[in-house]
Length: 453
RNA sequence: GCGGUUGUAGCUCAGUUGGUUAGAGUAGGCGUUUGUGGUGCGCUUGGUCGUGGGUUCGAGCCCCAUCAUCCGCCCCA
Image (cartoon, rainbow, N blue to C red):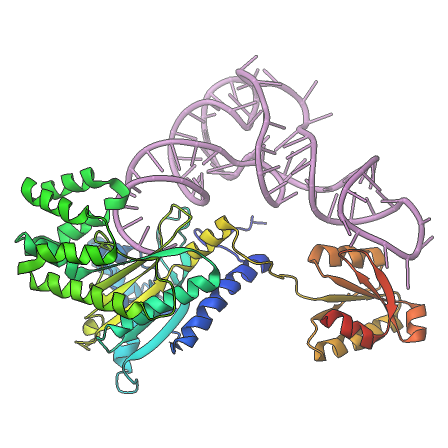
């Protein structure tokens, strides 16, 4: 017999974990629907050529590939084997597991462009797979939870996603900060120094700021060819602290000659102004000049949500993209999206103890008995209760009564109904409250009243 | 891809400089007035010591390899 185990980097979710996961999923879903987002699902399996080349070289290596069915070696020649796995792979595997929800969404939009009413709001909550090395909070199978508005470049959409963020976390009672910035502001910064072509180097270095500190970022910029003066200017731009409004005014001075920088500030201003009327306090909405968000496809506003009371990383990310679907033959489709890092949100909520008392037990009441007649009566009563919306189950065997009580205790079923000869005679049951041990002899209609109360 | 940590019962872990038949707690089973759980008491099931080699009269312990695990780095959610 082999020792059972989970495949590397994967987990089972038992009833207790599922209760917590569903609690969070349900709240998020509720607000998605409230904001008019429509659910879609896409297959776990995509054609490999849909996926490859979308995530960079490292991403391609992290794709799970699916071996072709049947004799997958039939088209493989000895020359192929010599040429190595990279050349041979397309002949061995034509399909792969989805790596994120964004690329399948882009495929879906471009395939259904004629049916969809734009701007299209969709949400999608599904697992994705990455052949990454598992670590704390990092798995090979995990859920993503995305909402996007595609086919409109209005800044109202950005403000809508901010309101969505606020309503979800206020429902979850999780205190967060939402940092916003714009790629255009960052471009304005390099623009104002005459370094337009160094934007990527700049963004990559700046993204590490809160992790490694200014000195390390400074060093990285100098290594990339930035001058000491330029670094000083950058430092003075990003080290300004103040209210959102003050930051905008401060940067406006630097961006006098940068059209794109000015545009970025204007967009931030517009979104902040709109958000003032979203019905939330928005004290946690912060224009963060140093927010860069790595090397993704974002072109405009970018977001990052963080939990206030926990030191580690971001739990929400997102932003505006202009060109997500062009690789599927649909150019000029601007959209804005937000992605909730479900697994991390669950971690944070667990750390902070934010879950309410969740009833993971299946049944509210267990029926137990001493004879075949009792069993019959229990079965009947059980089905009566279910019609009343009460979750009920019958203990399956005539055994020592003790066993059924231990069973109820272990499953945290709050009530046990005992049906013996005496109860049968009088059309009653003995109802025991497992919390305090109280027991009373009552009728089935009284029992329904009690449990419903 | 790189560096480190740890693999002993279902779970959490002891196990001395290498020395008889590998232990504990917990969980499970049975019993403790046969119609009553959670706490108690008694008995009890359960392990190729991650896997494969090596050293040795003798290996849970030493050496090599390998797999898994967790923690950093890279990257990401």
